[in-house]
Length: 232
Image (tube, rainbow, N blue to C red):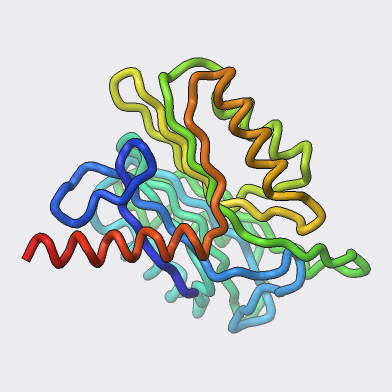
């Protein structure tokens, strides 16, 4: 899976490599919603979610448990938030296995450290569902922290059938920053969406920006390159 990375400051601008504070956001390769099925090595596919107090070696232990069952990790996403480790994986196996048994094998990998594990059999690809052409955008919002920020923005997006792919929020002092990667159906006028979001931002005292992901990546890559040269 292709990915591009950009380090941003509290106002959504690239900080360059010289400053350590910032937000790391990932932009994935564009696709059509519902068009691309999961690509797995084996036929029997499961979704595995692991949560634990963070420490080194969790991914190694979990992946070893999957390998011991002759399984393959076809895709995964992992993060640490507030000292808690979370990992979600698409795992495929050559033979069917009860989800409870799969979860128990992963739990045992934790040894004395308790892993919370949730496993479910993956659904097959949707059939007869109309494919919706979408474009990917990055939304950034920052301002004084207050109750209801995530709800207000996500509620607006849901009302427009805009899917949130990745979401990151962080509070520092009395400021809150929210960065999301979203899929916008092509039926919508982006200028209208931007105007709506800016108006919502003004009501909340937030600055909001909506950019096509290609513009977002190109802009921040240029800033990063410029910052790299300046730091030499």
